[in-house]
Length: 106
Image (cartoon, rainbow, N blue to C red; front, side):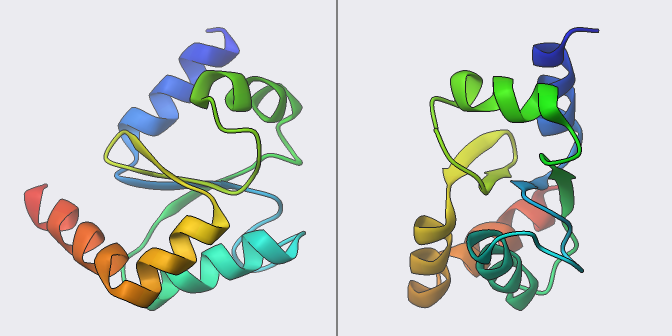
């Protein structure tokens, strides 16, 4: 399986997936930490991939997603965006609504 297939499988097999630097328990950058806090505030479990431990994904995902930075939040196969978008959606209530809807759909 090549790296693009690996990324596609990860996105397909996880309703809520964040590609981040570090882990939710130990983020390695401030943007990843803020994104994890926002996701955690929504009250649903989520999967994560530490791009610092997966160099092939760290190099390939920005091209695949057409999104240059990390973190990257994917919900139900769709790229939502990075830290600023995640925080904006948390603030205006759309992040929790989107996550709740997707979790009810499964």
